[in-house]
Structure formats: C-alpha cells, structure tokens
Length: 111
Image (cartoon, rainbow, N blue to C red; front, side, top):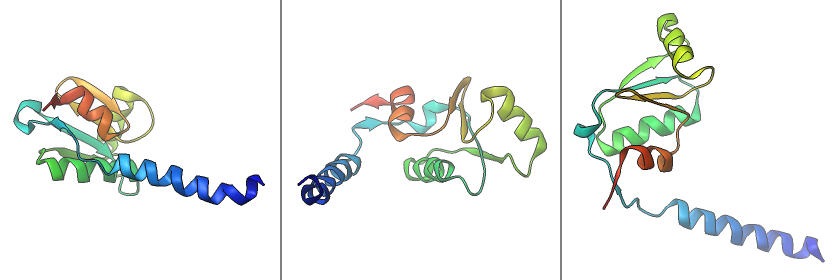
C-alpha cells in the first residue's frame, strides 16, 4: 500500500519545497553597506555559481578568486575557512559555503 502512495507524497513534498523556495525574499541587502566582498571559488562548484548569481542579481560588487588557478588565493581561503568552497568574506566576516538564507540573515535587513 505504501508504494501506491509514495509517488503522490513525493510530488506533494517537492511541490511544497518548490513553492517555499521560489518565494521572494523579504530581506533588504544594501550593497553599499557591505564593503569589500570576496568570493573564493572554483569554476565547477554549484554553490559558487549560486553565490555569483545571487550577488549579480542583488547588484553586489565582489572580487572573485579561483582557488584552483591562484595558489595564493587557495592559501588565503584555507587559512580563512579550511578546505572547501565557496568561501565568502564580507568585511572581516567569513562565511564558508553559500545559502541565500544564511547570507541574508548575516548581512541583510528585514523590510
């Protein structure tokens, strides 16, 4: 019986997640108030691409360092956050990984 309802349950759950995920953000990000934003990334990283797209959509100016092509940038990223990308530095604050919600919680203001 479970197998009969599993596809329907899966569709409902995924539909709910999609609906919540696609909701517009109520958090205001003021690009000018962020100061210097650095993104330590790779060309193939999906989370890095999400960060790039988010920054571009919000008009956030950022400086990107490819840790696979730049040895000094790789060393800086490792010293800041350990292994893994993306590493995002906003002013003096370091964020390891990227999620829109976490970024907005740290650097945004509720509208």
